[in-house]
Image (cartoon, rainbow, N blue to C red; front, side, top):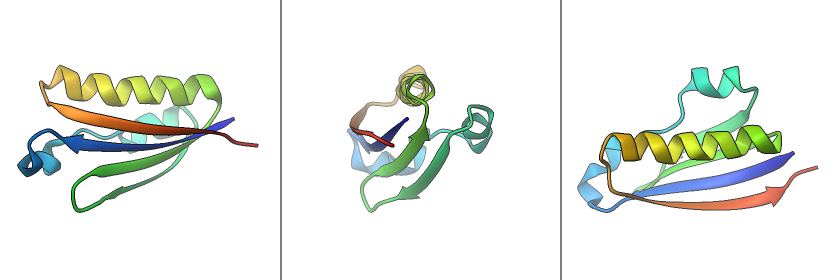
Length: 82
């Protein structure tokens, strides 16, 4: 199991509302526990689960923003979780 703390920062600070996060449906389908919240300048998500599923979720997060031509910075901290 791992825990990933992920933050997205838009390259253009006026576009925070346009950043794509993981949908509740995706998280539930992949049996991931999570917390999400908007900071003043970032979209933040903490994901807990099996390693392969967490890595898949991180890839989905980045690729969805890339697919929608959003210029974002993604910062992830990974923790070996119990």
